Image (cartoon, rainbow, N blue to C red; front, side, top):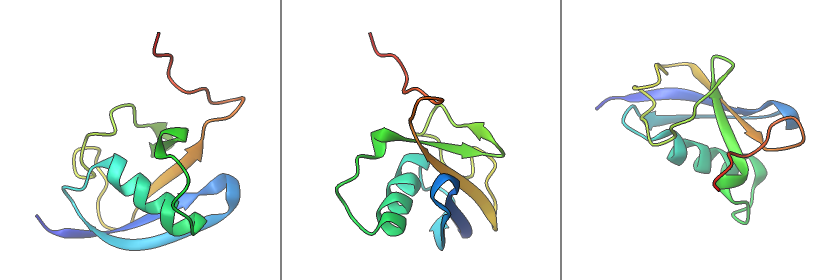
Length: 91
């Protein structure tokens, strides 16, 4: 599958990282790479963050970038769970 240029952003922290990823990369993998590259550390757990595309939360992060409609020059937002955005209940 071909590579696409993806803009990974953390709008709450004013961070951005542009990179090429294969279109069959999962959202979860892209999110983990973005967290590591933008925060410059590997201690953050990707489960503490969620991803958005076109201002909508991606609930199934096992989907590929192509599956969610992200094409070259697309933007994937990564946000931390906080008081306004709660992590999914698993009870």
